[in-house]
Image (tube, rainbow, N blue to C red):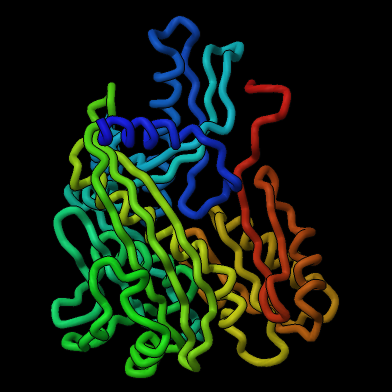
Length: 396
């Protein structure tokens, strides 16, 4: 009874409102089905899932690789889109002149998609590339407890932290940090046992950071459990919670947050893995602003402002920002400094304050994308691009 009840919570949580459509990892997609189609809503959802997965593949596989293996890419995801969906949120839906319409935000199961692409012999996109600048290394100190085992990134048997550790690694690299793991054989303190709120205290976290020459440590404790089969579906559910704390090498506590996640898959172990990856992404998202504020990206000297552009589906928005910034008074140059899938950092040589640079960036032409532009600090401007939303009067 308990497993079934938890399963219902997980199944319905996908439809619960969320605070931001731009939560990290979300892909917005639309689907339509003819009015006469059997279960038009399900058919529209299937098409939206397929579109979301195609976009996820485009973000994870370089253009040349996709072109060389176009048939293999299609075969790897054809008819399997739902397998790669960890969670989704309905943004808008309803009857339309063409039939039934849905618009959804989809959180793709990175681990499952990566396995499918690897099985098809398709290489993932290259990791983020720092061009001349970057943020400091961060020690990753994580302990993940699952129904079957506990895995850690430290200690005698320390590894990569499983799906959660790998997700945290990717998210930190996209922000410009280089995650490092304590050297094998490094012994955790005695209180680092299952049930502890965090695997290490601040003093131990600082010691790990100093030992690795890192700017700080990201400490994570996560607990995951299988929720059994989800009633009325062929899927198994999983849920988990995690606490994340960031400690600088000088001992200062930078951030502390708690996150939760749920996921489903045909196999119980796959559901737990997907949930772990989701927790990892959410953990980094919860402390992202604090990380950026403590370690602004690419501050070369006092005359540089870094503009981080996220969510660009192509290079066109980057060029638009470069043109807008180059035309701003007091700007002597605009140079790409860091490249990652879906993210670019531009170094703006200027004596203008970040707020003025944000105003100039906001004048760039992003149509049809929506842009949120904010000066996050004296040396950092953030631009987040999102797909246009459905008009308030209803779906087309």
